[in-house]
Image 1 (cartoon, one colour):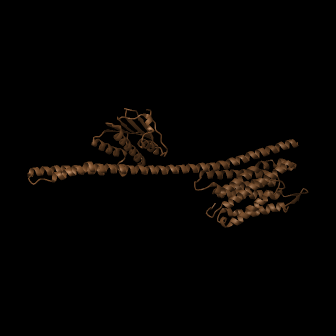
Image 2 (spheres, rainbow over the protein chains, first blue to last red):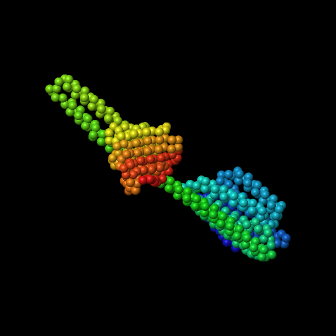
Image 3 (cartoon, each protein chain N blue to C red):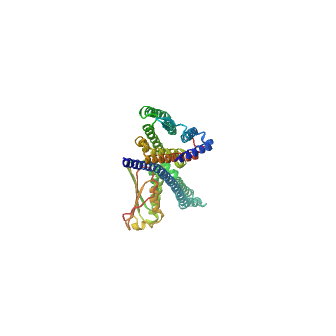
Length: 214
Length: 274
């Protein structure tokens, strides 16, 4: 059930090993991000963040924060890849504001802010598609897409968002009913999506050579 | 209630599978697009290099032809006339001053003729000449030279406003003309050769027609490299070559090109209505 933590850990190790090559690129920001993610997942596993609410231990409040940070990181990173950081900041700020309204005022901090998550995933999927469109437009014989770190990063992110999208859209309706089958499927898909994302990130770090700036 | 939830879960799974398939489609499309793009690029590079090679070959062939022409001219014309001048100038001691003066005068005329011939020879048709003079003038000079030889009568007609078609195109077109002329001189037994260059807004036609023995349409594929070269070279510059011939009806070679289009570097094909 927690196989994905292993893949997150592998991605972190690869990042540490490759850091010499990565430090001159924007991929260096993955190091603090991965440390944060691994810390969060281990903390979740150890129940460090569980807060008693309505006589139950609840860690959804930190999941809301973690998912929003994840969105901010990936959205800014993709915008930087596409050289549109200013627009990226504006979109990110707007989405974070809407997410905060959803988490605090609409769904509540003790429940998963699924509307916010869906909005964030929509933005990320759009950004990934935009990246692929730009890649097609500027395709070059000298560049092998399969050796592009950004290709693997975007591929991982695309599959991650697409596979989790419908599960998050139905989360509010199904998860709180404690439907056993739904929870099993949710954890399986969540596990698989994370495995895909962090495997792709690992490949992406391995593809980075000293000559690649992005 | 549980049944309803189960069908809802099935719906979500199906939807997720669809979304993942969409993701697979996007990635596959990207990879296939790159593969096709690279293949297209490689093909284009190969065609370009093939084009350059053909062009080089054309230049070398033209140089060879020019050298042959010069060599023939020196042997058949200049050497003969100068030998005659030498004989003329060997004035016997008993020749009268009037006779000597006549011989000298004859020799002067012969030397003047040789100078003219050499001047013509220096204007002989080289690659640089086509670039300097253009296709029309170069073909005019070549037609004049052939007419002068008296082997065949060449009629040249120029229609429309002549303009530059591009150095490489003109070079290849001239080479096609030379090839057609050679074929007419060597194999057709023709007495007359009609050449027409027609310049339209979006079309250029080069027609070379002889009244020789011709050949059956089916022998076109088996014919020597001359006619095949014409077709291939035409295709090289994005032109269409139509070779029309029948026994006893001469041969007509028509090259059509749109001067505004890019070179295709494609393989040619030939037609013969036969």
